[in-house]
Length: 201
Ligand SMILES: [Zn+2]
Image 1: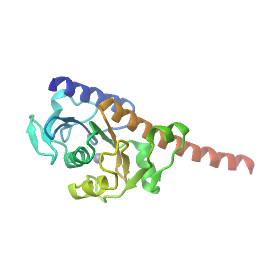
Image 2: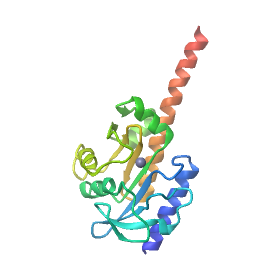
Image 3: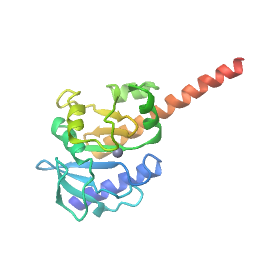
């Protein structure tokens, strides 16, 4: 059972890598387990090469429960999400370039398509934790911006990346891909607008 979930996470990580949503050894993904535990990517493992053994069992404070690797240092962020939102079954956090670019200059991600407005439901806000990793106190502050048990949670971390929450891994991955697509279209739309201006001159 656990091995199948580890393999699901491995597959998700590979897909996100192939989509250029996470290069190098940043980012982390997790699944909720029974008993206030989660399966989460180990520190210093890459989405491109992580095998099922690189996903370890940790508690919601990010402490290792079972496995041979150290859990991601952002385990407390994932744990804070699982504590606050009872429907949350999986979390995708990655440093996808278009969403992260939007986080540099915006307070929230604009709905650049009708599809994103319908699917994302709530604004995807930007939070600035001033760090490359989300500290436990910052994780608590962020999740407390949302209603307890909210079923639509996704946000950007300034100069860092995105966080997408789903009832299961497939949904969390879908939301992450939609955020990146929305950010990409917003940026390309801005470029097209500026090109229109050039042609008119
Ligand atoms: Zn990160």
